[in-house]
Image (cartoon, rainbow, N blue to C red; front, side, top):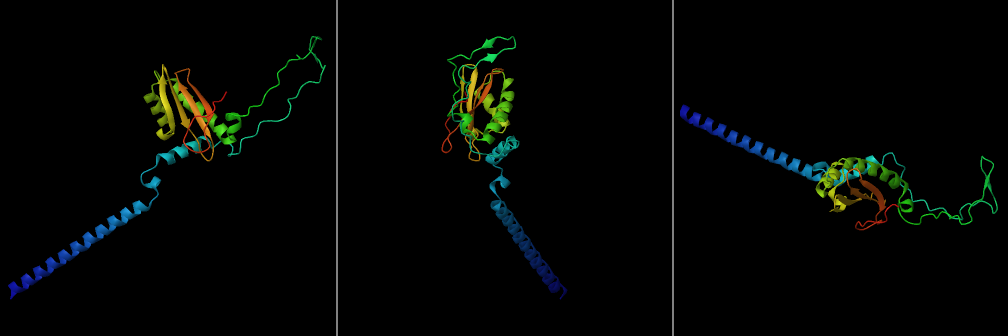
Length: 215
């Protein structure tokens, strides 16, 4: 009698253990599925981080002290101011100077960064030029590999670095900094203390191609 009761008790305990283990396993699977679904439903930049998001944040940080985007101001129109005919200028010594008759009137630019970049891009370009030039000035033998690494460290991603190539002791490159409808790009030549970084104009839409250099 006692032997039969003992076997029945062990059978009940075994069934209870199996049921408990199955419940725990199902609960764990459900938790894992919930976590996986939660990760999939998160934005891409929250799950793995997107270089484009970091790049855009860097552009915003650089331009945070600049004015909002606005259309480029048209060049001034109308004739340049000239002195009346026959006017003279009296110098401190008492002598007089007659303006030259062949004086050249200034011509307002009609293309290039001065007229094609908006106020925000023009301001931001100066900040980009300064930080990039300072980072490249002390580079000994600025090869494309070194220049790319420095640009990456500054937050400029490979997708925005173009035509990176070496010519003698100089490495040249372009940066596509178009953002929020702007047309800003930079043209750089890394050559130690002779490093130059200049603003340029990129197409408003479509693939990047270098535009007009700042004169």
